[in-house]
Image (cartoon, rainbow, N blue to C red; front, side, top):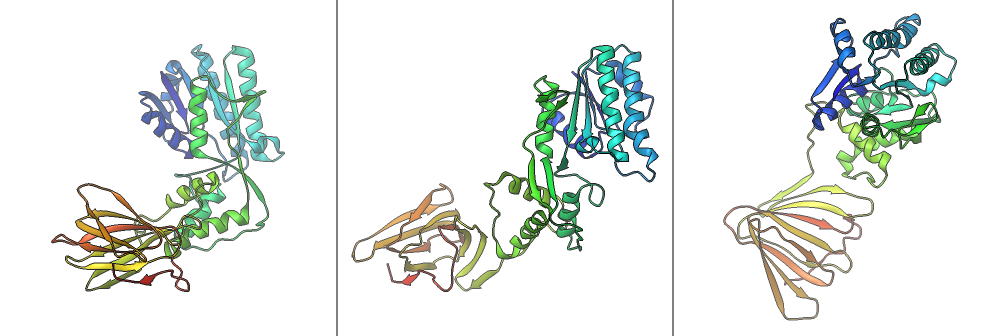
Length: 369
């Protein structure tokens, strides 16, 4: 299948062509503002499907709206007609096509042209009125508040909001791409003359900014956002894509002594926390128990023995652990326990606890196993 993508270097175009390549579509004709215009003729002659994503949304002069959003659409359709190519054509319009402004009028003109083309040629046209699209590779300080917020927060730049109470309608780029590939297969979601992308997320502008700021703070407080919420998960992935390339890593607060080192890795609001512990050869850590706190240990480097004794009992027992055979060990409440490095190199183990550490209520009581 030969697929023409106009606007292939734009936000939606880059994500779409990347996924088309992932799905092993071989013949993808990428057309953008820097492409030799003569190639459009050859592409239109051979294309089996057209994704028309090219457009103008922030020109220097208002007249460029109609030229970019109506004029090029006209050129594209005329070229297809000249070759007698009645392949399906998808066009990226906007919810602003329903509004009486220069951008909206230019998008509506492009839609009308598509409908006329379908009536004249019998070709299938697919019109998508996208709301605000967000995700990786969107240009900040251009036409996306989400991209600007993410970029500015990630780079510690100031942000100004005129009206934090504005409710935004948003679709995530991966959901857009998934729908467009369904359309390529003839499985688009239609509603009359238009096609739809789902889900549409609605959120208050001020709340979106606070959520993005909380992602930045998570490097300090180690709190992982609530990924059960799809919008939060998508926004978090978007935010990380705007980190500067020299800012991917961040230090953890680490306690070190002659026995080894300890650092908390991440915390959650309702699913406890994860820490990493490094133990020197021959060293034993622990010898304490908990009333309610429970843990899981996982040795990821070296060798160890974990010993247990139930409170009130004299009998102790043990588990020998090694990175050569990854096993998780539950540490139940009511058992005093310790862990000893039995190897000749540093032993590293991960700890998951079912609650965040609270220095005011540590629920930790010293007792030798």
